[in-house]
Length: 299
Picture 1 (cartoon, helix red, strand yellow):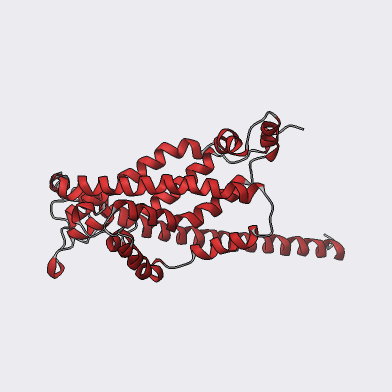
Picture 2: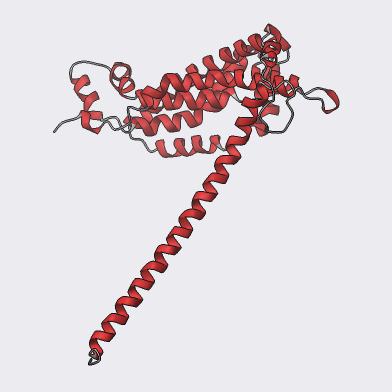
């Protein structure tokens, strides 16, 4: 049999090398994909283990720091913490503080973001940059002057003073978010309302805000969650135990000489996280509606 011509052998070797390189690249991509999956699983485990400990320790009569399946289940930890002094009063205080501060934050953020979004001025950019800088200030850097101010104006150890400070600390980032979301609402809809005789406040309340349902939900959830888990601010501004929120009263489970009631701490943590979960469930339907509003205007 005659040997294959040289060009044919060259093409065969080229195809062989091409297939080899393709298999090598596919192998490298598979290795990288498996390595990325392994890293993601490790990150997921790092987040899942504390949650698993909270759930399992809450029904474990002999709970400790280990993540384990309890040998016997009990609701004694929940019965021990479901008292007015431990749970009901602190949770009520938290709902009052965070709920009122969130409503104040969202309302003020909408009023502040509307002129920034709808009217052009040379001061808009400096103002927004100032707001962005305010979001980066550490809370510990301003607590000493704030505490001295609250003492002078008789707002120390008052719920209304803490609500005002909560709202003030969350307002910069809420304004920044609200302004960016409000930019997505077509201005042509407001111009049509202005043509019909509506004022700017009326167009804000009847057109802009109803179209910003998902955006308002995002700002509301973000503000509420940030306030709900805040320990330092109410710990500094509130002095009476009956006015302490749940974020501060959780410290009572850490006793003297390192003694910790782990089971009761886990049970209280489950109860403490319930309002945030319920809030997200309530607004999840609004969040799923999306933010695209450009289709509201037809050419």
